[in-house]
Length: 217
Length: 295
Image (tube, chains in turn blue, yellow):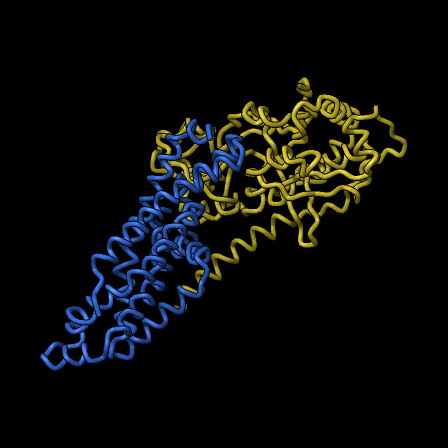
């Protein structure tokens, strides 16, 4: 265990960098995913087509390919930004497709009568979705959405390999490779524990949230 | 969508071209290292065991142009591979009986400790942390770290000018010695960008995401040679990276045997260089360095 404690400052830095990637990606992927889900159930055909296209593209492309496109394809088109931005962007695009599908399943679980009732009191589609359907839908999707978000937290390790560096995974690589520490204690005792701290606390938070927003049917 | 697809194709083809150009060595002229036919070693030594077995397991890189690169036929070629052949030859082991094991930087100590290979010849810089877990024979080559920039970049003239240009990103590979050593020349650690492969650094230099790439001179020269005047090297070599051969910790007899073998086969050593890494324009044929004492 001492290789981990000897380098605890590096691990703390790596942990914070990973956390930063995750928080930015969360802030992007959640609203974007809900927006795409709204597109997918919208009564306007072009919006539906756009939503379907978005989900099909990003759900069926490996994350590394999406990240590769962001980190190397965009600069090739003359769009230059930091690798941190490109990495978070790739993770947001990829995760938003999964968030959208989880949210859509929630929307579909709301009885059609709810939307009809909203319509009958004079709300239009957007208002009905926003004030009647989505509040009920989001409550039911906490468990599947939680799985998507925890997967995203682990996927942040892939972002580190696209020029971001300094995250938990890259820190492990650096310690074992350049600084010559044994692989096993570093990755099991340091890197894995770091990710567990993030994912387990996220899981606990989600459970609290689930209990809080649960609706008796 | 159309522009996206074109961009992706463009980006992918850049990588494909880079990879293809790396593999473009015409090495067929390399003559085979001599294989001793009558060898005898003191019983119980590593040499006796290996000669008896008639085979040796060697860890090399498979992604390092000029040193250890897997070609399309699945064979690994490069200077490290040739050096391994010289040592195997002195043990009476023919080239086809060498088993090459792909050994990325991160696992080099592990495969030696776990007895998965008999030696590691993989652009392996000798340093003290590594010596705590394994022993080194050699050095067999002295590399040095240098800086590569775009041909039209006049701001960065060497490692010293990196501090004066704090916005200039420097690219290297995660977990490599050069990535550690460049840090003291940087204005802040954020100036360093890390990838898994040097080809990704070269791509980022080409499309303006980073201003400089740093690693050992030989690797950079490979990129300069294939870049068609897009890249150039600036400044002097500012570190010395002695490449050694990793063996089981404390195996002094094997270490001395490797050192003696290299000293006795200087011609084969020079030929090994010229048929591999030496084919890159701008490289100088090295002299075999004085071996460090075995411990």
